[in-house]
Image (cartoon, rainbow over all chains, first blue to last red; front, side):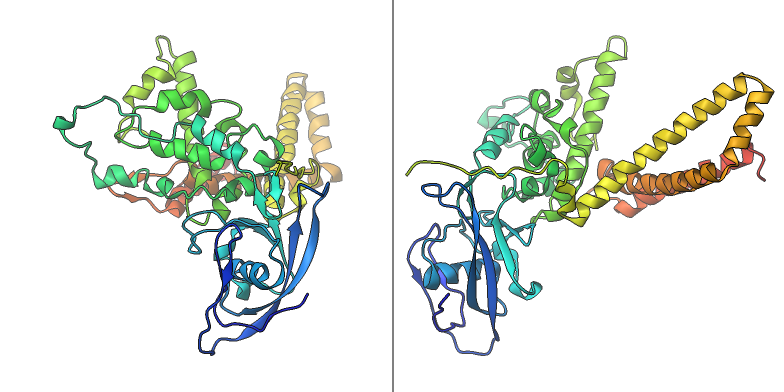
Amino acid sequence: MSNSPPRSQPPLAAPHGGAAASLGRPGGSSERIVQLEVLRYNPDTDTEAHFQRYEVVCQEEWVVLDALNKVKADIDPTLNYRWSCHMAVCGSCGMMINGEPKLSCHAFLRDYEGVIRVEPLAHFPVERDLVTAPDDFMEKLKRVKPYLIPKEEKPISAGEYKQTPAQLMKFRQYSMCINCMLCYAACPEYGLTPGFIGPAALTLAHRYNQDSRDGGRAERQEVVATHEGVWECTFVGACSEVCPAHVDPASALQQMKITSSIDWIVEHLIPGGKSARDTASREDAGDIS
Amino acid sequence: MSRNPLVREVPPTSWFFRHPRYMRYMAREITCIFIGAYCVLLVVGLQRLAAGPAAWEGFLLGLRSADSIVFHLLALVAAFYHAATWFNATQKAMPLQIGEDFVPGNLISGAHYAVWVVLSLVVLFLAGVF
């Protein structure tokens, strides 16, 4: 592959394949030739995916996304991938980098030696090159009702739903999910059993279940406490290891297994025990951890 | 442009070779075989005990065989690994919040290890080791 002369700043390309531009900057940082091996798939012409090798002159401080932008801007404009914020916030640029689910804007070239293999997120259908179809995740996300379902509706005149700092801390880490789907790419259960609701969606269910303002746990249990819900999870723990937002889905799912088990015991083994729907009303800010 | 997404299947019998974390997971799961086998051995021992002194002596003699000793050593290692993985997991399954802060996870796991040691000493005491 031919290359244009190196530049000191990451090439700035518009997301989703728009026109690329670059800005010069006084030197000082070191350059490096990076070998990228990128999975290519054209749905109009290919029946199989194949790898394509690119040699890219990069700056040492760049991330893999910068190298891909450089490829698209200077070498091969047909390369497709998603990105937006370039700061590990939007969750758009998740890819398999040397087999590990990573945000490509958060994968520094200095951490890799030799050929860097870039593939689309595992366990999702490949639309084109590094672009995957997130439809399944989006559908599952809706099913867990990831929004506040107030215990009781209040008129606006009654004021805001107040919450103490301790009540906030109970669910705060689970609200940090950026829906990047790296946890789905890391989860072998999701890869083997596509019906599994999966780590991020279930963790968001837990996030709202833990919210002192929420009263929707019983509704979510219809999805959560099923074979396709938490009981499909075998606690590999990979979801928590790859999460770029330091959410701990494995913890959320194990906690939900415990509360779901308690629901079952109360409903089936204790005379006069109430169903999960009834017990949900007991679950306020402090009684389940 | 039509959609023609490519589905890349997960190999059902070799996926765990993809990453060391999956190998560690499979190692944890495989320890269950030794735990299960040891439970079967205990049940057989009870059955031999109920069958009378001669049967019990024969069972004890079998336990002293080289194969039995190798199995017990393997089962012991598997039991330690199995227990350690689950005690380490307790901090995820049972986080403890006090006020605005969470109790450090290693304290929760450590408490489980401490209870394990105490209960093991009690069992050894009841068995007449001390």
